[in-house]
Length: 143
Ligand code: FES
Image (cartoon, rainbow, N blue to C red; front, side):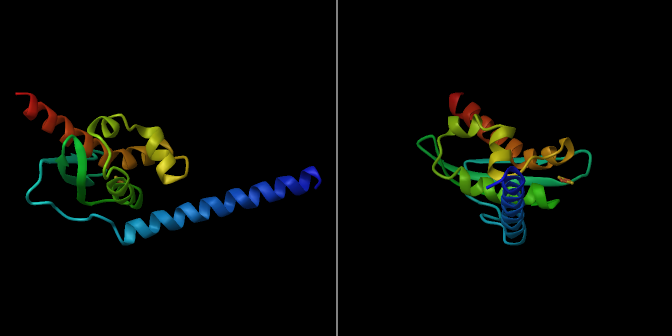
């Protein structure tokens, strides 16, 4: 294969991957997993994006320092709500330390595409709520 053919092939592959990730995101936005509020929860935390007013409430249960279940409830853009849905599935059965170590790079890998600074804040909303809730839980356990 010539270089120009390779380039076309690589571009087509990248386009297909992007379309795939966009479809996954839209599916999580339209059909959010683990959506709602856990009444008998071990932690509960809210996070608000001050620039747009979007917000997310995170509730979760913990068993032996492992995330048993995480639910999100909120309103916001596709990225913020789809990330909450993806995250709720990803963190199930992860240790508290593993979840606290998650950062923007993990979210970008989960979403499957690069995000500009504004969209990055959207995606960080649910992670901030989740990590805030876990920190509060740990603080209560240690007192
Ligand atoms: Fe508000 Fe994305 S525009 S969180």
